Length: 285
Ligand code: PDD
Image (cartoon, rainbow, N blue to C red):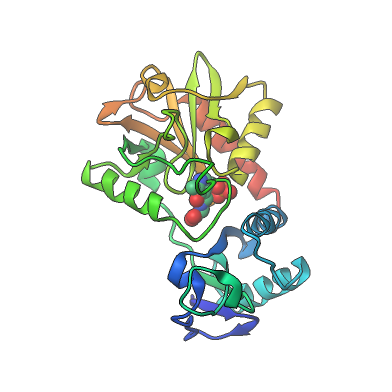
């Protein structure tokens, strides 16, 4: 099991970014996290599509096509020899002058990190995790749109630190307008009256790839779904809560602000969707 770093197409475990790279200086970059099955990337087309959408939204021109990314990811995963890998693709604005204006940055840097995957503890899935509603708000869409997956995650870093201070595993953030949004690296779902609810994209969230798949699976299996805008109080009588993300997949939440969610155990809809999601992933390769 190894860590492999692909820097602009060259495998180099000791790769280092310039201190003048605007990704480092200003968080001026975009990224994706991809997971694997049998060490092959899954949902890669979806991730590459979102990477390009994020880049376009910050007017960053990615100098390579999808085939290049697929080949380089393949090469890096193979070199790692990991049973399963965490794959992170980062595209930075590149090296330039120390000036907020990216005009001096000529070429984006492309870094593909492959590390052995660090699975979440089994007990998190069996017993659920805890969330804290934090005071830090998710960025409004009018400032830094959370729909763009940029390397500027300080907002979420602060939320995560606040959650830890409150003794919770992760944070739940509201928008500045008081609506539920998402967690620090995952989307939010809850169940009310047997119906599956999730904040809509216009609440200011990332259009999660796992979120999309879960909504699709739910609909195909006769679970009523609703995307909308809700205040935090909507969770007061939620029967179930869970988070979705590439690494977490479907993570039950059984405590919110120290209170039990439902009966304090992962609920039937969460468990059903987890089973369906795992079956779908298993069928991919
Ligand atoms: N995070 N919301 C935020 C803010 C995220 O950073 C992520 C993903 C998600 C879930 O999206 P997806 O289902 O496409 O992974 C939602 C990745 C995993 C990360 O930053 O590690």
